[in-house]
Amino acid sequence: MNKKIIIGNWKMNPTSLKEAVKLAKASDKNGAVLCVPFLFLNEVKKVLKKAKLGAQDVFTEVSGTYTGEVSAEMLYSIGARYVIIGHSERRAIGETNQLINKKIKSALSAGLSPIICVGEKERDESHGYLNIVKSQIEECLFGISKNSASKIIIAYEPVWALSTTANRHDATSADSQEMAIFIKKILADIFSPQIAHEMKIIYGGSVNERDAEDFLKNGGVDGVLPGRASLDPKKFQQILKIAENI
Ligand code: PGA
Image (cartoon, rainbow, N blue to C red; front, side):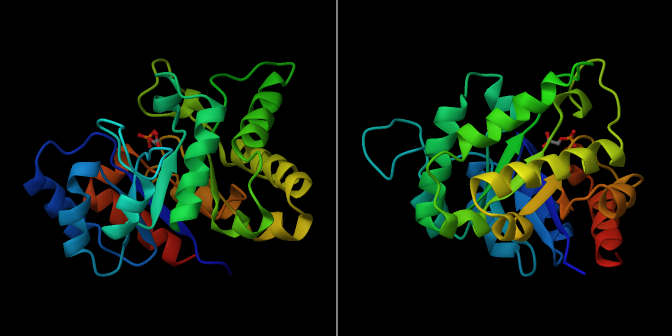
């Protein structure tokens, strides 16, 4: 059985370096990737022995006159190996598929694995949401070579199921499985069936210690991307344990 990957998205948490280091130490387990705020990457890296390090965004260019930005090379040089790109919270502040595409290319050329977030805001009865996810993937992966595909992780995160969405509701493992099959088909058309088969698809959207097992067993995915639950070491460790035993 393929090893499952558990990616914690800390978002803009915690509020101090001290707490970040404490949380990192408690979350340092095999199979985990911790995607932490830029400012904490360096110190978190120093305490990680088993978990891998990731960022939550990256800029499109290598270096230069881009005030406030962080390049993929910089991330790689301090030990990050993953980066979340195109999270719905960044799309909500204006990131387009075209910008995300450039960020993915810059991440790949620096040697980072991009975790590309896709997902619809809501589900409609005429299944228009499938087209939304399809064009997100096609536009985000435009011009990406087959050779790079194995480094890419697609995270299906339906916005309506995120813990921070108002009037949210739970997605089921059946929702995840349906979408995972659909995403594999899109990836097969873009790259090849063989490459699509090898690419990782994960699920995110309020994953917690109670439903992780169902998503990992029945959701058709290679891992999960908890946000809120990754801030609670007990919950995060439980999710990792579940993943280990699958
Ligand atoms: P959540 O966050 O688990 O708190 O819903 C997941 C995410 O937004 O990546």
